[in-house]
Length: 328
Image (cartoon, rainbow, N blue to C red; front, side, top):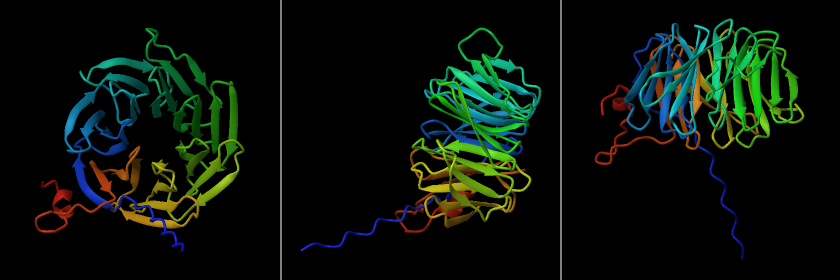
């Protein structure tokens, strides 16, 4: 006699607000988990970059050196270095422990929208409104880029690095994938300004958001459209999108104050997360757990969202209302 197999559990999404961190750095332009998800980076309009403990929500270090608002940041795989970019046209390499500027890299002709280390943190890649991606050797004493990619016909809004591949999105409506090992360039035309790009965790797909209020999932090799996700509003802001850590869900910021979460395969809207009344400008999904960071346009706070409800063990009362306002 055989018993029916139990139905697989529906993956839960981060929908419970654990805490709001007041960064006190003006508007938060971007928020990022580090490589292992134990720390987070907040990029401020007050020219500062801040490093926080995720578990405690406490400030660990402030990095000051940019001349204008910080737009993006990334951490090295070993947590020893940070890189950041700014509207001041520069990219800065930081020493995490001392908070000192290791190197300030100049060369872009306009504000730098996005920045990321390669996997070994030997190269920093930066994309700018000047239409170029510049590659900087972190070990060299020279301050010139080792390579400049200038195929974009308009500003580069987003980039992601995965092993030997570089993915870029541009305001010219094109997603470009550089195979750095083979020296090849693959281009997909979206026909709308690109705001964010990323690879799937399995490396088989790319995710792209654009100003026609659509997030698209593409087959990396063929460029075939595998899914379209709509319902959110993205008309005039550079907003983030991402995949959940296990590639089960697609997430996107929205101008209506929500984060939208779709089932990757079915394309159905699974969650409309109410973050606030302002534009949700940035988000970051934890690299291995069901946790989410959010930041709103014009606000100084970061939302830290969990899948599970936090409950007091003594009285069985949800603790979220108190934790939300920083009362532990």
